[in-house]
Image (cartoon, rainbow, N blue to C red):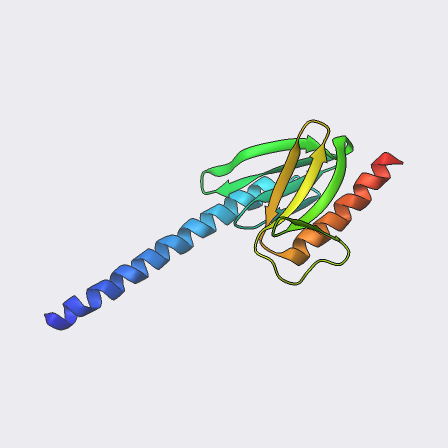
Length: 138
């Protein structure tokens, strides 16, 4: 009986891990369905981002769907900056480490910050979107 009671907390941990895995799977499936119509899309724990032509849409993924959606046009962007730990860095030569990674889009009336978990992924998105943005300007 005592041996069974000792294994009970371990069983609770396994049930908790199974629930967390199921929850993450549901979130990824929600993102996958949301990302289908986009030319480019990214998912991480902080935000989802999708591009369809000139339109960028970003929000937060959850099991219930993509929440806190914001939409803006790339043609309305004045500047694109990569920020690591609150400092603007060169998109072509980003640092290797950093905690707070943000791709910032400056519009005429506001600034939109899309968070990333990975600096290299943020830099790649910055390069591609800067190229698209410059093509729109010309």
